[in-house]
Image (tube, rainbow, N blue to C red; front, side, top):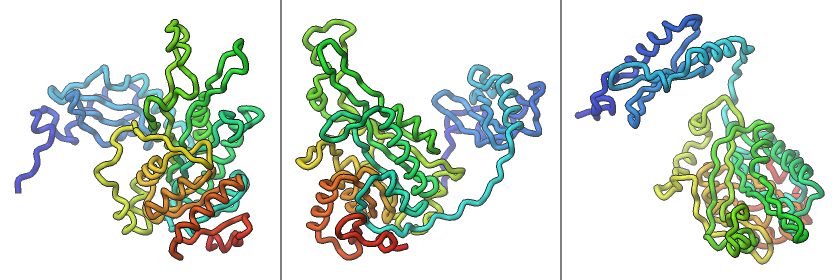
Length: 397
């Protein structure tokens, strides 16, 4: 059988093997005074054929301290791209001075006991009743800060952020090892009170990012949900400039929202969640088709509802759930609204837990799901409603 040629071979590179790249990197580092060679180890060298170079990661005590870059054509060090010796020395010293971490074995993932549930109440309190690591994905679109008084209103922005912090914190406790929290959020425009004042645009996504990092998450991606061009004109932003065209007055019409993707901190790679999943058949069934979103620009039409003033499209929820969970997983939405996340979860053979503080929206969800006449296997438990099941029975604990 004819074996496929390596990129390095087809390009005729002088450095064609991983072992060759490591040896060149080792010789280079041996000539750096004060660099402790016994504490140097290498990650997996990778070839970057766009620039005809090898990148060789350099580590000390498992921590990356830089990289050696080699010109693949002539087998010389690319000094400009290689981490400077002084920086290597500083990083190696810092790595050696860090207290050693004890590595404890992470228990393998287990299937969640939670059933499809609608919980009425404040997420900050209700999420405390969920077992630790009992949900596999959190996806939500939190209330907009003071954008629509009939929808949500807070006395201060700090009060709003503290609410978000507590929800993120409780969600992290419920979220299983190394799994994802995805949030749909956007800057908010506060209208001016009079002609002598300016409107204000609050950069909510960037404050959310800070909260996620402080609460033990790692940033993964920023996806941009793009709406049709006419979607943003209703807010009036950009109309003044469109009429006058004076410099300094330019304000683009916003037609995007952020889909921020975070992963709960863990020492395990994402591959661990796949390999150790207790239902490998579900992992295989969850493979994503070829028509997936290949960039972080998602073009999706907005949704409208007679019941709720700020819904997100079912298509958006389905994409997130499809890309960040497996069939049979439990998807939590701490701000359940009218149940869009739950509908998407059911469509994709996932379970859901919706938390919603509004009686009106809880009633809407109950009526909607009752109309579906779901099979017994998909029955929905109600918590803190007239039909409430006990918390232990609802969560099958």
